[in-house]
Image (tube, rainbow, N blue to C red):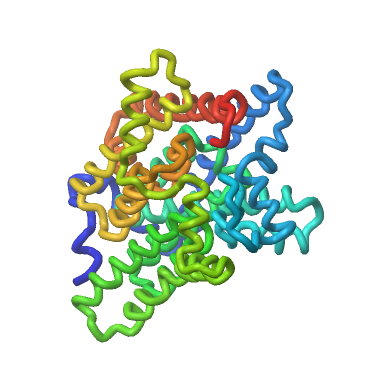
Length: 389
């Protein structure tokens, strides 16, 4: 059966799918990319002003703090060789593609590894924005493609897209893997899923999305060798790194033992529900950033329901569904969970489709609120919030 069986229903399509004939893809995506750069540039200006007023350096915030420091440590010194017993101290929890890509870029460019890592993240964010536009444009038309790109740029944790983190690189792989599946390119989709699996622990969600799509397509094309190869290739990145950690530590569950040291094992959602009750019912003065994280999780569940109702294509639903399960069922730290959902951009498609049908006035008001709120909350997250975003 073709992927078109999972195409959105006609009532949500705002324009003819796909670019006009003979228009270069980059030119076709230019409005979305310019809008993305504009939103993130505004956020960067607000962050710079706020950081200056509080006597913080902008460069350390973007390139060397929190997870960025861990990735730079891996690029400089490699991985730990033993498990150890100290909590939250083993760098084997961090997947290898981004730090080693940073190391490779730094070897052939001037400047420090921190600047190379930041450059990789910024370039990857633009590639991710292009992929997000391509998926939205393919399914709903150009207008929705532009809007979903703007909404992704305007996430409350949007500044992470231009920090020395892995979210932008991972989202780039995820977006283009989904686009490859939607355009029936199994080996491309699987290769990108493999790279996503070497980038973040949640790379398993991209592998699951590509595998589910390929297995579904095999029902109608059981002899297609590309689909069979895609099922085998897509999970290799994630499985390869997890297996390598096990061999390095001399135990089959080595990676999961590292995650337990970071308190990131799954508990079925008990910790998530406990934090919900604490923040929404018992804490008289909850911190703003934790409320933003809580709101993001709740809204994401609602948007997933809308995505199912809109009959999004199978790989999109699998990606966002698996991401939500991983994030909500985690017993680990609570405050980064909004960031962990950043690659789940298909959740924004129902909102973008609705905005595409709204009046110009309502559209301007909604986007102004989203972009302004993102600039404020992003700067707050980076300067006032006391821990990692």
